[in-house]
Amino acid sequence: MNRTIWDKARLNNGIEMPFLGLGVYLAAAGNETRQAIQWSLEAGYRHIDTAKIYGNERDVGLAIQHSDLPREEIFVTTKLWNSDHGYDNTLRAFEDSLGRLGLSYVDLYLIHWPVEGLRAQSWKALLTLLEEGTCQAVGVSNYTIHHLKELLADSPVVPAVNQVEFSPFLYQQELLEFCRTHSIQLEAYSPLTRCQKFHHPTITSLADKYGQTPAQIMIRWALQHDVVVIPKSADRQRIRENAAVFDFDITPDDMARLNACDENFRVSWDPTNTP
Ligand SMILES: NC(=O)c1ccc[n+]([C@@H]2O[C@H](COP(=O)([O-])OP(=O)(O)OC[C@H]3O[C@@H](n4cnc5c(N)ncnc54)[C@H](OP(=O)(O)O)[C@@H]3O)[C@@H](O)[C@H]2O)c1
Image 1: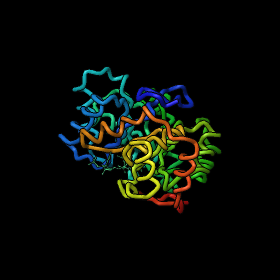
Image 2 (image 1 turned 180 degrees about the horizontal axis):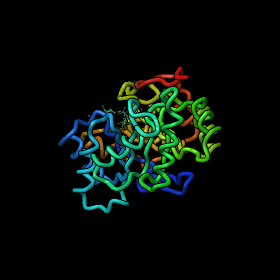
Image 3 (image 1 turned 90 degrees about the horizontal axis):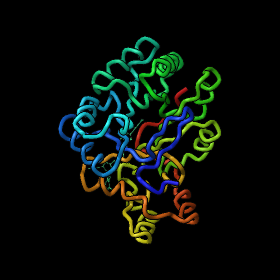
Image 4 (image 1 turned 135 degrees about the vertical axis):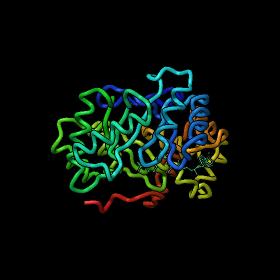
């Protein structure tokens, strides 16, 4: 499991999603995003995670078109922004995203945030898109167990993916187990804690022990939990570094040490109290 950069998670509808992807939040629109994607494809990534709110969907699309790779070899995720919720708005927002990407389909469309009062209607629109075939898979992001239970009680389709913040410092074990039980693939965002825990003693000691960087230890930890992971970098060297995580294994004891780093530490928004 997770022995090569080509390894994929099989989603609950049979679609395959590469375990490693490139996140492009805060990659500037224009050359920075296009260059980052080109470098990532050269390094073997085949999965890009964007969103309407990142403002770089157009560049994601251009970079894919300018690569020599067939469209179907690259897994593309984008997301429904909070101000676009509701059935009709969602369908429109998706069309707009598709237009900016210049693609005829996306591999995965996610509800970016569980917007209170509107998320159920938006989910219905995602099911329409799934049926139409303009999304290969649909899922959610920042859903807690409470939000997932609500969705599952009212939907004939189980979300393929839940993308949440996940790192050794936010080891959401209960959510991970819930998702596993319901065949929902967990996907880790901010897996590097945006560099904030690179100097934590457990991370530095394991980095020394395995001869890897702190970023590589944190990415490998997520992969060994069978979680899809999308570190962001716009730097060629760091894009390569983050992909060089398939030639070592963290032992079970050291996985336990990393799991024990959990301190409910977040660098992004917290959905815990969203009703
Ligand atoms: N669904 C959601 O609500 C949500 C929320 C947040 C993020 N996301 C997704 O998850 C992706 C990743 O999360 P993130 O961007 O928040 O944080 P992250 O991946 O944890 O960290 C990114 C930061 O780490 C730096 N970095 C990357 N690799 C490095 C390395 N090997 N050594 C040192 N520094 C390194 C990057 O700088 P450089 O670019 O200069 O390398 C950037 O400042 C996002 O891009 C986005 O696609 C989704």
